[in-house]
Length: 275
Image (cartoon, rainbow, N blue to C red; front, side, top):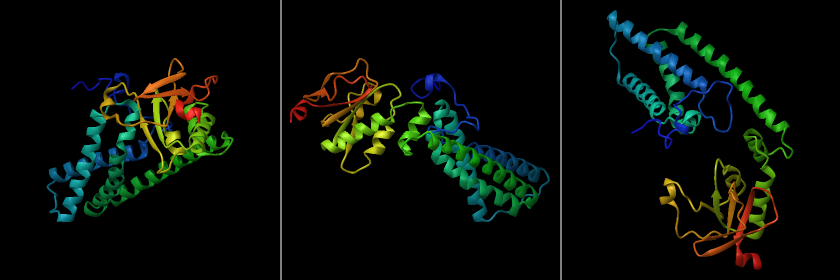
């Protein structure tokens, strides 16, 4: 296995911990949780070594043993995914489960150190630092979202999303979603390329009556494409050259607005267009 293969890493780059100032829709790694866990694990190892050398180890009951096993396994799992899921900053999306475990691990480890090893002064100091840094980061997050809100015309989530992405497609996505709803299209194919933003369309069509599937997939995930799926319309984004028509699974699709220069558009069944 090649750890830096582009299939599992962005352009072959190694895992990189994001700086505290990078807060966006792609970042789920919480630096406060990460560094708090790092510090507490180092402290716990130091305490264990000290107690072993001084022969001050105590017999642990079953609950304490379970707590220690939980801390070790959750932290080891987090480090393993840091080592092998080397997809630069965007690896954060896959760390959510382990971050949830770390959120539990931090108070468990603090409790062990404070109650079982009588390190209450150090424990309270750590809690104070975590609260101070957490409050500071909360202020940053409020400023971040306030900035998006101030730069949103409709004051909605989609506009804020595109504002963070540096794209101006909020209106395009909203209009396309509205067209799909008004025309009664229920099966929507996604024909996309590059770093297409799919989330807004899923969010705008957040209803059980819609089925949204990727079509004409060319990468290794094409084995998951449903060959029986026949979309009523096809959402196209960043497809060069611009498609005036398209054939898929025996159906002919044509551009809804062939004169439009916008890079986000719909292809619909030719028979539906004639209705």
